[in-house]
Amino acid sequence: MFEWRWDFTFEILPRLLWATLNTLTAAGFGYAIALVVGLLLALAQRTPYRPMTFIVREAVEFIRSTPLVLQIFFVFYVGPQFGIRLSPWTSGMIAIGLHYAAYLSEVYRAGLDSVPKGQWEACKAINLSTRRTYFRVIIPQALPPALPGMGNYLVGIFKDTPMLSVIGVAELMHTANALGSETYRFLEPYTLVGIIFLAISLPTAAGLRGFEAWVRRSLGMTK
Image (cartoon, rainbow, N blue to C red; front, side, top):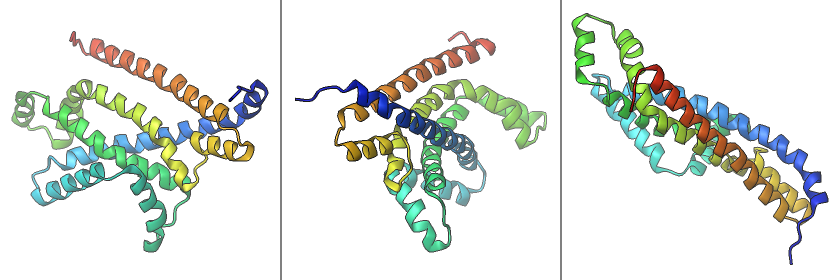
C-alpha cells in the first residue's frame, strides 16, 4: 500500500519548483512566438496573391493536423540533416511556438472576419495604407473577439510543455520522471506536478477572463 512521505516531498520540492521556472520559460517564449507568427500567418492568408494564400493555408492545415510531438522531433532531429542544429530548449520553443501559431492564426482570422465590412470600405475610401488599415483600425476591433481563444491557447501551451521532455528539456514532467527513476517513488513527484499545474493554470485562466472583461469595458463593449 502506498504511503505519502512528507520528508521525501520536501526533499524533491525545490527541484520541482526549479523545473517549474523552466516550464514557464518554455511556455512564455513559445507563446510569444505563436502570437507573432500566428498574426503573420493570418495576414498572409488575406493577401491578394492567391499562390501565397494557398501555400500559407495548406501549411497551417498541415501543422494543425500533425501531432506536436512529431513536430518537436522534426525540428530537433531532422533539422541537423539540413544544417540546422539547435539546442533542445531552442528546438522545443520553436516547435511549440509554430504549432500554436497555426491555431492562433485561425483565432486571428475569426477576429478579423468579425470586423464589419463597412470599416474596411471606410479605410479604403479615405485612402489609408494597408498597414494603417490593419494596425490602426481593424486589429484593435478584431482583438476583443479573439481574446477568449488566445487565452485558451495560453493555458493549452502551458499544459503541453511536458511534451518537450521527449528531447531532454528539463521541465516539470522530465524532472518528475527523473526523480521517480532515481528513488523508485512516483506518487509524490507526479502528484506535486499535477498540483503545480493546477496552481498555475486556474489563476491564469481567471486572470485572462478578467483581462478580457477589462478590455471590453475599456472599448465600451457591454456584451
